[in-house]
Image (tube, rainbow, N blue to C red):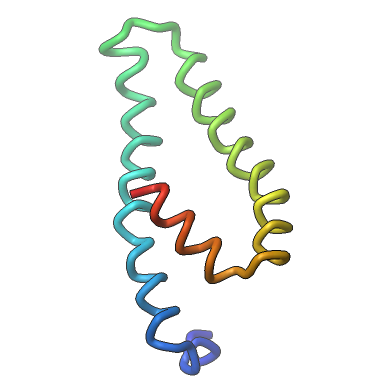
Length: 87
């Protein structure tokens, strides 16, 4: 399965490695919201699930136009821009 990625350039591998840290941070946000909103903020229990669902759907929906933009202007450029914006 991973043998397909053996030919990736050093720059592309670096971009993938640099995406690990922001991805872990986003994962912590998703898991912490389910505790923070009801226990600390005192919101009713449906709010964390609604918030996480909206965040997930937003990521899916925004990937369509950003994918089309990346196809038009270059995936590497858009990946660098996206990684810079998340950091």
